[in-house]
Amino acid sequence: MSSEHIRNEGIPYSTEYFDHININRSAVERRASSLPARRTVKKEYQAAWLLKAINCIDLTTLSGDDTAGNVYRLCQKALQPVRQDLLQALGFEDLTVGAVCVYHNMIGDAKKALGSSSLPIAAVSTGFPAGKIPLEQKLQEIKASVAAGATEIDIVISRELVLNNKWEELYEEVKACREACGEAHMKTILATGEIPTLTKVAKASWVSMMAGSDFIKTSTGKEAVNATLPVSLVMVRAIREFYELTGVKVGYKPAGGIQKAKQALDFLILIKEELGVEWLNNQLFRFGASSLLGDIERQLEHYVTGSYSASYRHAMA
Picture (tube, rainbow, N blue to C red):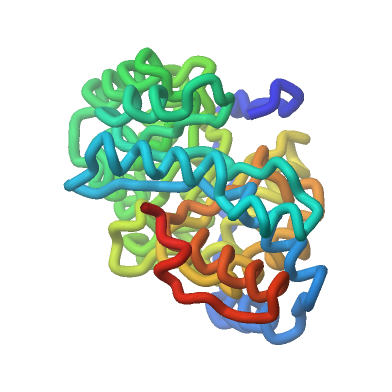
């Protein structure tokens, strides 16, 4: 994260900011469905947007069978996400993803693999993915990951606080996590697939930003339903309203289920239309993804050569 980006220090808890919220699901779904139908980008413009998408990816491995070798390959792909001949044909020399995202015990392996690179290391924390551990243990996890070298921390909220409308308790939990992060930037995962209404998604977004979240994020990627355009619309409009209130720009990270280049374009279009071009950078927008990069690289090769290659030619390994 650039030092030029003003961090979100949070604001005092007050229900006046979100008590009135009542989201009309039908209206949200209509608006979300109109985005890919009305907005398209083609040819060189599509290639440029896809390069932008790559630079906004948190390239992620969060599997139970992660090894040092897996993380090494992930980091090498993060540093060289597209074949050099394709980048040269596109007029780009240097391109990396936004960050690599790993479990706590893989931070050391990621640091070793990245060497002298300044690419950020993000670590999932706070009992990821369920978050079903005591708050004190969550805070210890955060501090341990920061001490190990993570510069970004992805926390998960206690979903039961949202389900039971315990908004002040949620505020205090997220605020404590933010303090534990210190200088590391904090992305707060709402796990929206486990939140039953868009109204609660909006309120959870507000409370998380009030408590000092640098980003709000849809999902862990482990839920049955992950990032969707309707949920994203609700969350980015909360970001826009928070910015109008405070002058602070909070970032947004859709995660889970985004596997195709076309999906990435839909999310970028959403951000441009709802938040503006100022959010179209990896300081304020990230994709949480693992397989997305391979499909984007296929599309870029098609733009350069006129032919599609097999998916296995763009595998992570």
